[in-house]
Amino acid sequence: MSEETNKVHVLLVEDDVFLSGIYQKKFEMEGFKISTSDNGEKGLADAKKKKPDIILLDVLLPKMDGFSVLKQLKEDVATKNIPVILLTNLGQKDDVEKGLEAGAVDYLIKAHFKPSEIVEKVRKVLGI
Image (tube, rainbow, N blue to C red; front, side):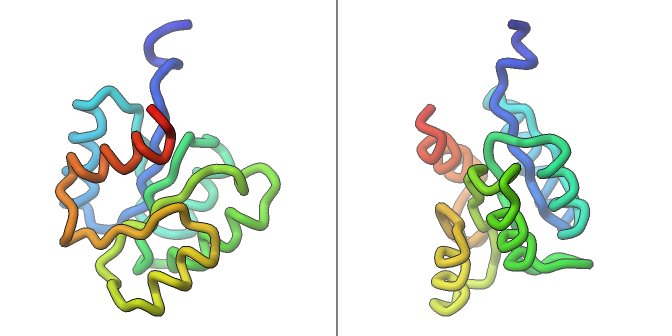
């Protein structure tokens, strides 16, 4: 198996281009394969098409919010077992509970975590 196909594939659904670039660079430096989507609809389509190992999903997104994307991912047999970490700046307890109840494995507030810590969270969720 070539090294490329052996890499863990992370799908990042994030509409902030600057942040997306930072996360992308960090995950690539850590040896992950990363794809990005800049809106909810594209994120959902990419998840179904690319079947990533894990999804980092923003909540506030154009076209379809992260909660809707998460709900649809969990309702689809093809994507329901892909772990989803919500990565957002919405820190209200209600939002956190809503995300976890909808099936997210974790809920990270962007402002509280450095990119390296997010990489660690991904490794922990995937057991690598």
